[in-house]
View 1 (cartoon, one colour):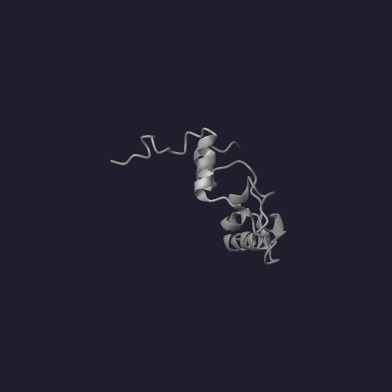
View 2 (tube, rainbow, N blue to C red):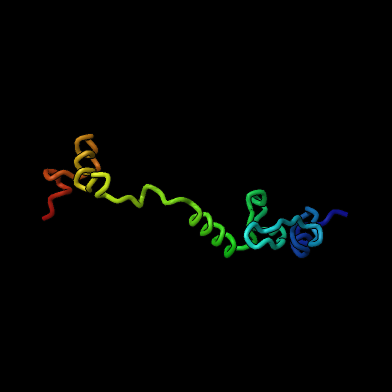
Length: 110
């Protein structure tokens, strides 16, 4: 017999066979080392998932941030000779229109 659309809607809606819970794929979380199983919301990105929860994902990112060496963003301005006015002057000399000059309408407030 062919199931009607009404009958399919009552049963769950799809003709595709459902996966049983005991047959779901599983992985081990890289942070807490606990096993976790596939979820419907991970259907498209299961190969990229490596943590079991948002908490573990946040912890993984925090550990990654802390293990990274300090970047160039934490330099001492006095040691390299570049002050903010020097940087602005370099931008103006390069013809960068995004930096307002003293004669531009952006710099004049009124």
